[in-house]
Length: 369
Image 1 (cartoon, rainbow, N blue to C red):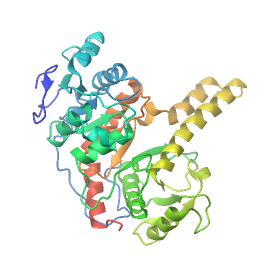
Image 2 (image 1 turned 45 degrees about the vertical axis):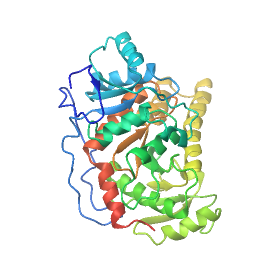
Image 3 (image 1 turned 180 degrees about the vertical axis):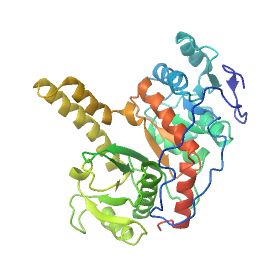
Image 4 (image 1 turned 90 degrees about the horizontal axis):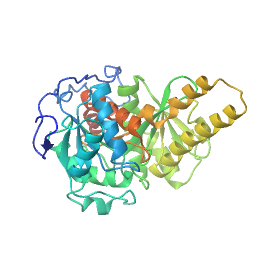
């Protein structure tokens, strides 16, 4: 498909010049918490297929989304296809001097940011539905959206399906720690009312993600609760703790909110409701603390800026939606262009490294239930 041509579900674009593929550096890490053979990449052309971007999602779509997609292509060599109302998207591309440079797939409908999920599934002509269909049919290597998390998750499950044995998907995001590394927070908002069995699966997904993406050979997993003592927490947490102690992973035990950024564990598992609050609280607290410090002239502005960027959405791009059959990255609803560009890079790297498929294989070996 020539640049600037409108894409249709089922049409697979050819290789795009200028792409700079690359799997996560830790893709060859040692044995992880879930035993099983290395699964070779089954889609070796993932680097040549575009990342499908929901142009209409987010608080600042389509203007910032289109700008971010253009930056992903021009600055990072990530081929993209924008999905949305074609006239609107083409107008934004023209405004950026990118007319004819990026493919556009038309989608008549827009899922509102207030939609929680079920209504989005019924909108068969939305940018989410059309975008997921492109990925499912092989026309895209991954999908990126800054739309309503509930709507994205519901449509992803409906259009792409979950991997074998997976009960519900979970969002994973790597948070920088004071120890210098990162801790995977899972679930960060995909499943707000999980069962204990789902949380057990989230732990397996998070541990394998930490191994494959962060290069942690034997990740320590902590269950977020109101205390570090065994048996602390509500009924959901207590039942999940019992299940986690029986899984083939390095279970550290329960951890508290104060442990999220200390590096005490490599993976923190929780329900999506709590996890999303934790994520946004971390982002907000970092911004507020640095603003207070700056106001007192305690530290150099450039140093404070470097700290702020470590936790900014444009640095991590978004959260990987794990447990599906394809690669999906969910960006923050308030994402600006830089965050979308980074999300496209993350999605491309996850797809090239076959991370999602390999996670599914590991979970199939030990489903955690």
